[in-house]
Image 1: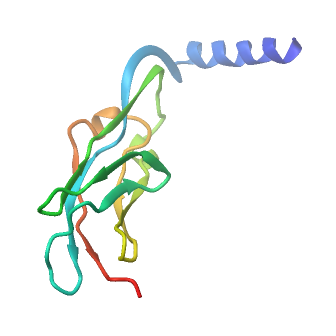
Image 2 (image 1 turned 180 degrees about the horizontal axis):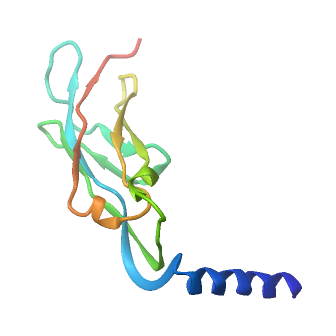
Length: 137
């Protein structure tokens, strides 16, 4: 019980100091990522390749008949906003996008992310990642 009181005191202190502001909002956690997956030898598009953000296969997409894909942006609902004492862009992280298909080795590409505050950094932002897959032996 004593720990719960300490947590409440710390939380209220953070709110009163202005570091945390109660504000229900959507926070963008990753931008839209799109691109194309092609064969490394022929250059032809690969239909049905799976593309996803590493560590988040719940948003896995497949390429269309022209090899194109689009991973939609992700946003989470938050009750509070943390006010940074300096520039908050340093909180942004990068994502690794993976493309795979049966008979080909997987390929990875790093794209800019937008974890943290401000959420406007990612609002409507689009990233591009093309993949050239090599046949596996």
